[in-house]
Length: 395
Image (cartoon, rainbow, N blue to C red; front, top):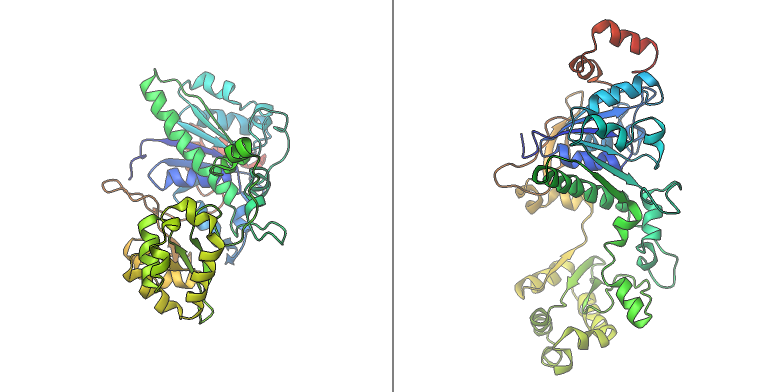
C-alpha cells in the first residue's frame, strides 16, 4: 500500500497545484478524497486530449483518488467538509486566500475539532502580503519568480517551458511541507499547522545565485539561449544530421577528457582552462569549438565518442524517444494501464523509487462523484439523507 497508507488527505481544489500535490501523496498510499463541484467537477477533466469524454491528463492527475461531489457554497456542503476534516491528517486547498474562511472552512475552524490537522495552502502569492488577494496561475509565478526573464534567447521575448512548471514546483513543496508538518506533529505533542506555499516563491527558490549576484555585483542575469552562463562548457549543439545534443563538460576532469576525445589536446592541457572560472571567460570560444566538432559528425557518432570518454551527454528526447527507450522501461517509468473500454495505454511511472515501500497506480482518475455515496455513508449519512442532498444539489 505504500509508506503513507495510514495518512488520510482531503483535497479541496482544482486544476494543477493542489491536485498534483495530493497525487504525489496518493501514489505512495495516502487515502485521498477529492472534493469536486457537482456542476462538472474539476475543469482538468476537460483539458487537453480527450478519450470518450475523459481527459487523458485527468486519468493520470487523479489516479488513486476518490471523487466526492459537494457544493462548497451551501451550508450543508460546508457541514460535509467539516465532518470529513475531523478525521483526516491533511487538507490541501488551492483557492484564493480568504475563500476557505468565507465558507467557514479556514484552518482555525477546522483545527478546532481536529487539532492535529495539517493544512496545505497553495496560492499564487501566499496567505499574506499586499498581493495575497490577486489571482495567480503558475505562468504568472514563473514570470514574477524570475524564471521567464532568463528563459529564451537574448534577441527575442522571454519564452515559457512547455509544461505548467510553476504549479508543479509548488505542488512538490506542498507535498514536502505536508510530510514535514506531519513529522513535526508526531514529535511535538500532536499539534498540526499550516503549510503556506506561494507559487511565485516556489519558482524563486530555484533561481540559484540570481539574488546574491545582483546584490553583490549589480549583475542582472539575462536570457542566454541554450548555454549556461558562468558554467562552461555546457550547452546544446547541432549535429551534421540536424539533430540536437546536450553536452555538459563543465567538470574539470570531464573537460579534459572531452577535449582529448575530440582531438583538442591543446585545450585539454591549457592551464587557463583547468578550472571553471577560466573556462567561463572563454565560454564563447569553447562553444564554437564544440559546435564545429558536432556539426562535422552525426548524432550517433557524437554520442559514441562522448560516451567512450565518459562525458555527460544525450540527445533531446521527444515522447516517441521516451517510449522506445530501454532505460525508461527498465526503470519502470512506462506503466501499462487500461481505458474504460479496455484499450491499453501508457502512463508515467511513479517517482521516487523506494526499495521497500514503492508507490504505484492502484486505479485511474475516477468518474465524477464515483465515491460520493460510500464516503458520505461512512460519515453517518443514511440513504434518504444522501438522496435529499442530491435533490437539493448539495452533492
